[in-house]
Structures are given as C-alpha cells and as structure tokens.
Image (cartoon, rainbow over all chains, first blue to last red; front, side, top):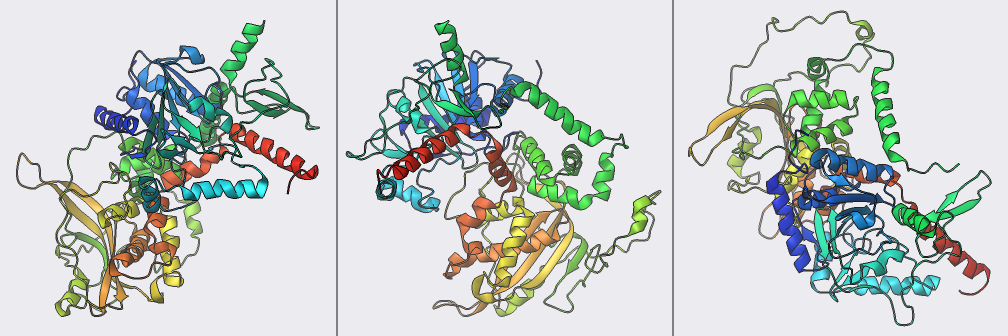
Length: 278
Length: 362
C-alpha cells in the first residue's frame, strides 16, 4: 500500500533522534528528557507525544493496540489506530495479550503485561511539580537537587484538610528511589501495576517535548506516609456485564431517572472475563 | 440512554461525511485556490506565518479544506511542513534591499526614500460596501499604471539615531547555529533567536492582546513606544551551501517588518538610551509585526536588569502559550473522554461527603 509518507509518518532521522532520547530516558528512570518534538497531524493534547514514541519504535512485525480510557473502541483510540494502519500498514489488535506495542491514554490494561511488550503512555503534563511551581527553570532545579518538599507538604496538607490524599488520578510516584514522576492521568488504581512491571514503560509528551521511561523491573512507589498508606479505589458494585470485582469500573447512567450501572473500563478484559465465565 | 464515545469507527466516518456535506450543502460553486490567494490574501498570509511555511498555494488549500477555520488551516500547514526535509538554513535576509510596497515612520516626518503609504485599510472608512454583495466581474488591475518606487535601497530609518549613540546597538554577531524551534525543545532562559521564532509563529490574537496589555498599563513603566519604521515588501532569500562556498539566491518572499523604539532609563553602567523592539513576519501582517516588536522589547527586560512584574515580560508565560497549534490542541483535548478520571473524582467526593455527613471526621 502506498501512503505518500515514510513508514510510520516520521522521517528516519527524526525517528533515530527520538530513539536516542528513549535510550537516555531508559538509562535515567523517571528523568524527563527534552526532545525535538515534531508537529503531528493529530492535535496537541490528543496523544502526539505517545504517537511520536510509537512511530519511532514500531516495526513491520509489531502488533499494535491503542486504548483510551481503557477501551479500544473510543473515538480517539480508533483514530490513532487508523493513523498507524494508514502510515505503517501493520496489524492491530484489541487483545492485550496479543499486542507487542500498546499505546494508552489514562489506563493500564488489567491483564498483566509481559517482558515482550512495550506500553507507551500519552502524557499531557510530564512535570509532576508543575501545579506547585509553574516555572520550568525552577522545577528542573528541584529535580536535580531531589528537592521534593513541595510535593510532600502538598500531600500532608490534603491529609490534614480532608483526612486523606485527595489525588485520585495522576497520583505522583517515585521511580527507582530517585525522581518523582507523573504516571500520566491514569487512576491511582493503576499505580501498583507500574511497580516492577515486566514490560518497558515509555512516556511521550508532545506539546511539552519530553520523553521519560520506566525500564522493566523498576521500583515505582506511590508517595504516601507511614500512618497514611497509599490506597487504591474500591467499589461496592461489580461489573454489570462480566461480574468482575477486581477491575476499574466506569459508571454509566442508564435512564432519565439517573439509575446507575457499573462496567469495566478495560473493554478487552471485560470481554475475556465474560468468555472465561461462560 | 447510554451513548458513550464508543463505537468510534462508524461515528468518525459519518462525522467526516457530515463535515464535507457542510461545505457542499446547497451546491454552490467551488472556490478556486487562486481566488482565495488573491481575494482572501490576508487570511493566506496569516496562515503562512503561523503555519510557518511560505507557500501561498498550500495556505489557500488549507483555508479551503478547513472551510475558513484559520487555526485549523494553520494546523494543516504545520502538519505538512513537519514532514519536509531540511536542506539548508538561509543566510540572514537584508531588509534594506527590498522591493518596497509600503514603508512608513511615525517618528520622523520625512525620511530618506520617502514615506510610502501603499495598500492599507488604515484610511479606508469601515463602511460595508454593499456593491460587493453582487460583484459581477473583477477587472484585472495589471494594466493600471502603478508607480513602483525606483529606489531599491531603504536603510533602516532608526539607524540614523545611531550617529548620536541614542539607540542601543543591534547585535551584529549572528549566531551560526541559530536556535530552531521546529527542531529543538524550548529552553530557559530563552535566547532572542528562540523567542523571535516563537513570536513569528505565535497566535496573532494572543500577541496582540499581550502587546496591548503592555502599552495600556501592564508593561514596563508605562512608557509609550514609537514606530521607528514599518516596511512591507519583497526581499531575496539566499543560501550558502558548504559545497559552493558562496551565496546563491533561491527565491523571494514578502515580508512585514516593524522597528519599535522604546525608552530605557539607564543604570549604573549605561546612560539613558532608546532601545529596540523588532518584529518580522512573512507576507503582509503589519498588525502582527507591530505586536511582536512590543513583546520582543518586553522580553528583553531581564537583559536590561528591569524588574519583571508583568505577564508580557515573563519568558515562560509568553513563549509557552503563544503557539495556537499547541494551545488549541490542549484546550480542545478536554472534549476527549475523561470518564476514568472523573470516576475517580466521583468516588472520592462521595467518600468525603459520607465521612462528613456521618460526622466521622473534621
């Protein structure tokens, strides 16, 4: 198939530049590497960083899965998948276990990832300290000095005010005992999956032009205090489709009276679970 | 009914079809690219600037394809230019060697080479011309006797002030490897080449608002800048390939240039002096070149040791938020589904409310 564009859209020199940055990022887990981000034919904030990372590492033999909010059939996931089908002519899949490369926005699949897989996160704001310090010049210094008091005080203040940390997504983690890292807007429910993950985790921020990485088997710790340990979300309900009590649930309104149902956010997990239980 | 943003494949197809239908609703005549280029030339020029690709044909195509949504057209052009190979960097253009179409100074009544009004809306009365509602044929203006200025040398007017050292010197040592915002990630403190490129590509509305804020009161010391000179015309572009070792002209481009004069109170080392703000754009974008020159001067504040207290002087504030391709992308991403994150918030707020209502905490 002729597309009129290079394989995976980006030219080879650009891909090589991005791969070099990825290597650097892997060598310094959690460190945000500046890179010469390119404009992409998709809008900034819609996954351009993840797309550039994926485009730089994808090969003809790869099987790609793209999810948004855990689902394969959300419009933006479909749109990104179609983009790669168009410029790479590669195989795609909905099955987490079948994929060699998974690009995601806001979720980590429920199915445990293995050492032959790479997960690419789309990152809106790579800097976990940005809401506490707006200046890049300052936050880079704070990371360099491992000066994270701002963040700890913030969490402490939340506990003193609300009785618990109120961050429910993009909950900050410490990578490899060194850098405080933004896990991207995944729910804190997914944070424990990042710890010691067998798969390589890559993070691309297009608008902010940063790449960071968590190599396989790396310690990733959600920030907490001894007397206020980190907790994940739980539900009283189970998935109304597959009955799962272990997955992250989306709440859906099913009638005009506001009656609620809960279903798995991870559509592939839900489907597999349903098949298994049959 | 549950109609989440799922089942995307079919929905996207229909959506694209509806978009195309919007353009062809009643089957009016298709606009030709040349018509857009000539009759909507200001739109075309805005798009080549912020799209940062000097190609008026593609600009017109982008405007047609985006159905007149200029930010969308700019985005289309950017996404095209990013795939183009970089063959060479041109040498710095010389705006004193210019085929001039318009040139004015607000600081001097008369200037060598003369004030040339050229094409401008400035002195038109902004009254709707109803005769355009039904304009039968457009007569070509080509044969109308145009008084092209014979002079081809228009040295910068404000350099006359240099003779008395009243004006700060422009830096002469050009950087051999200029910062390239299309290749290098943003760096702070930013260098002038970096911010000039970002301003040239920056959103006109954002820069206009910023520059307005500075001269209205949210700028340095409430001083009033003066237009030293505004130029609009055609300049040659040269490259100097390593293999050749000399310059060759590869074409010409239209530019708008603004030199703004501003005050500087002086400090321990420097007596009071005029300072410069500079704005350069592709095509005819005079308003934007003026806005850039004011923002440029404000961004130089730090270098003069002036106090930084207004948004326009703050490098990170201005440079991170000037790009409308970045801005529109991130603002509109809010319409992407966020239900996973929102579920987290729902979960939390119920928990917090329950704790309070049951008098457990606080």
